[in-house]
Amino acid sequence: MVPDTNYVDVKSRMPEIKELFHTRHYVQCASLCEHLLTRSHAQAHPLHVAYLNFYLALAHDTVARETVIRNRQEELDIAEKHYIAALTALTPLELQYSEEVTEFQSPTSSINEQRGSRRRASDATSLHSNHSVSTTATSQADEDFDNKKSPAFDSTEARSNRFVRFSPAPETIPDGVNLKPAKRRPSPIVIPTPKRESSAERRQICANLSSFTTMIKAHLTGVRALRNTPVAPLQRWSFSRSRSSTISSRPESRDSNDDVPSWDKIREERKHVTFRPRFNPASVQSLCRDAINDL
Image 1 (cartoon, rainbow, N blue to C red):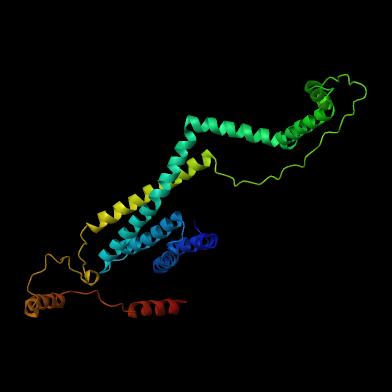
Image 2: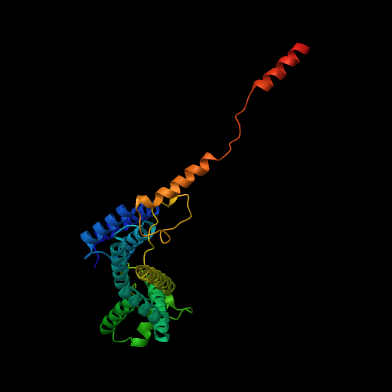
């Protein structure tokens, strides 16, 4: 059984884990999940164990996908490990709820549930009625005791006289008969029973667990596919080169002597380039002076 304090503590940390993941603090999210798993794995609820393993795997999975790092394979291995751990924690819980849902949906259970509801309704009615089982048994015991004291009465007359106030039509009471008031027992103490989930709630929980399991399996398939995909080679210094050559089209020899003729050719071509002459303001100044003189 899961302790209440541990259950409430882990449940209160769930929004913090989700917020860390959504704000892209993947390292902090993974560290918090790992800390909670290490501290309370044996006493945690199976659903909480699956939740923590899922977010821990999702953090490592996202780091491996969004950044090109050397230990990408290691991140994918950790993600796969915790996805499998989440599925392992969910499997018995899902089987338990599916069996309970099947039991609720069986014809025998529906009949028993109807009988139980009718029994609960009758018990509730008897608590507020003078015809309860305990009151009836006590009245019959008192009736036998009265018959021993007055042998002139038979059991039928005594029984009819005892419950005359409950009969719809009054009966004639013989003279000289003293009716004893019916004893009234105190109301029994009602002990509240814990409320069980209805069949609809259990079906909803089972459907949610099934969806969660399907989502984890999809993430696990994606991690395995990404791990088997080769990493594309990096094209370094591609932003600083004006030539359209790629790494594969470069010559194997990178001696500086091979680049000398090309640089000389470029320098010769630059010498014969004709540039546009600079702006000369002399003509504009003379035009302005002529206009001023005319004025």
